[in-house]
Image (cartoon, helix red, strand yellow):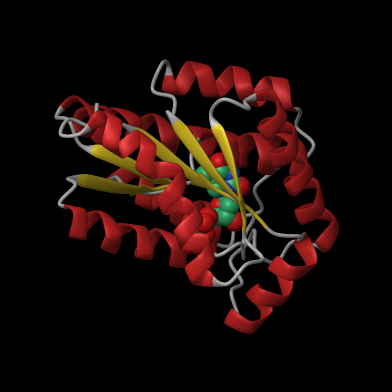
Length: 209
Ligand code: TYD
């Protein structure tokens, strides 16, 4: 089974993935967590270029680099893990590119979706947990945590566009997307995530494919 977790920066994704990993370990579920961009040798280098190196990347290059990192992780990690029956949890996946590059950077949703399908083929998440918070809430959380990679220093308008992008994706992929209210307390968000996964986990036990 393949689960992706999405949301704008500052939505609380990292904390929730940690809590989910603890919960799955307690259940005895064999799982693999992958992080985009990154997660492979080439992908981690690409992550540095995208988020931390001082290059003036145009939006088009940015998109292509995210796609290259994704192509690697799908083939090196995600597919082998799924084939061996593990539950795979992706900390961001294809929807991030649609929301951030397609809508946030105005490259267009269609072109990004076309590239995604070339890159991932049928390795599409079974379920996408979308942790939703308003852009201003997310930004004030980021300021507190002093997070400031290249994308995290974007404007409020940028994150509002990204959120709109996610909302559109949610409507278009209503079977796959689950909306989680990220404004709630950490424990409640975790509870909602557990609930949305429990049905699927029970159904697939003991093989998560
Ligand atoms: P993330 O790992 O969530 O950041 P952090 O390590 O700070 O929690 O994501 C890195 C950034 O990359 C984030 O700002 C979103 C952005 N991103 C895109 O713009 N497009 C993409 O396709 C992906 C996967 C991430």
